[in-house]
Image 1 (cartoon, rainbow, N blue to C red):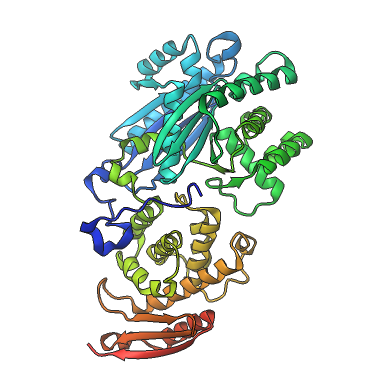
Image 2 (image 1 turned 135 degrees about the vertical axis):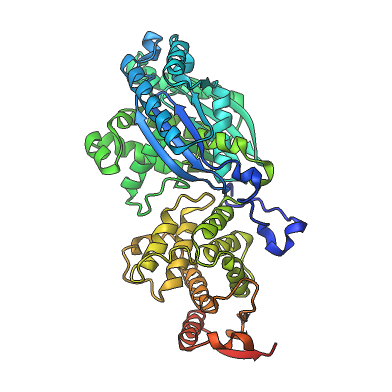
Length: 520
């Protein structure tokens, strides 16, 4: 399934690191990406994003959006919205000063459909240059599609399917496969333009259908995953979550079906938009565009018939960061690289995560590569929340894992990671405020996460320098027997608490346990 498998490179020079390779975040080519700033001048909003980009899955050091509606009315007047132009200029001035205060080495500004199409777009760019010294680069629709597709690849290196990026004044489509961007097309199906289209509801629907048929002729059949990029799609996803009562309010990797799109369209039609806007945390400026975007989405799904639909929080801005990454960093698993970066920054004993991973993997010999990467992530993160109060550490771990800005994680994988880290600090998962989220993971998955967490909880008792012998598991699943072999040098660490944790792990495995001392 698209996006569910990460590309894994085997580097003989990094063999000791296993299938995930040696960490790259300290490599000079990666460090050069630290604190990358982008201003995105869109038709509906102007946004500043500053990436802490040394890891493969970058952190958002700063992220601010100002709704300007710069493209409102361009279709009728041919010119930028005068009020929106003032707001956009003020926003860019603010962002330029913020960037200077952060000491950003570079700040890139790009503009899309509104500035591209308006007859006074060049005049606006010149005004921004005079007032701020900042040059705005205008990209065409196909380049916008390419960068948005690269943004998706930032989060899903192995993804394949169709990217759909909707802005205020345009909608772009792009193919991705084998880590590369294929055919790209652009259209005028942005909600700001559709709102101003003459002919009422019937004329608008006819226009959307006609344009979509032309796009289908250019791209051909697209039956794989559909990735949705853009603020209007995110607003629709929030509404879909509200309709379903979905418990995990994380938009990235949220999944929808064609049936869900139809049901959410009816839900929007039957709802008071002001009440719905408030319940879903959607701005007034965005909410007025949602019905138009919904018409586009319905026709898009009906035309291309994707096998499933995924939301991507990564788009053009992330695509610009991806553009600057060396290929060997692009090829890495974004989840693992990010977790390594977090471990190096926040763990008490950086490097122990790798030792712990090797310690627990005998319990998961038959696990596929997709599961091993989540186990690896859990081991890397097992100690990064140590500053939290002990009474709340388990819940803090779960909350951080499920809601963190990490790429390459489905929602069920987020819950698996969260539960494993919760059990790293707590035997029972009952009685937390997160119980509604557990059912996003199968009962078998919940049990597996519990076993991993308890294995990490036990392994953490042998907290020694990386490379020091800490003992090893031998697991016989058919016989339900667990053997722990401990070197005599580590025996002083095997006290009462460690023994209790081993018994708790054995209980979760429903296994008999034995302990053997190894003389070294």
